[in-house]
Image (cartoon, rainbow, N blue to C red; front, side, top):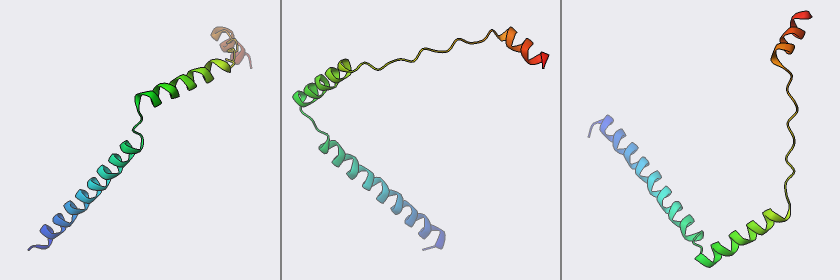
Length: 77
């Protein structure tokens, strides 16, 4: 076997190994996160209740200076 062919085969084997590992990890993650419909519904209700209990204050934006006045002020310096 030629040296460059051997290197290509080793590279392809490495890529296949990485892809297979990713598939296994994704499958395990899906199984771990498999919730029933009732679990999802109860978690959503809990989050909605928590969101309505504590309103987050929204800061008011500061008024912006008129762009023409800002330009005049800069030019006077």
